[in-house]
Length: 59
Image (cartoon, rainbow, N blue to C red; front, side, top):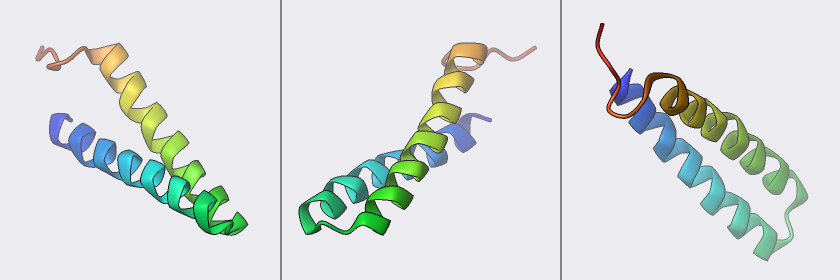
């Protein structure tokens, strides 16, 4: 789960960067999809850290 959090965290960061670039280029569809990716993957990473802690506790 730890490696998955890192990968999805990177996807979330890239979604944020893509959102900023799409805002600069005024591409509405790019803004929507990049922000959706940022929100979904960022929320997953945040809730996983909140639930399991960081580093994740092993049973």
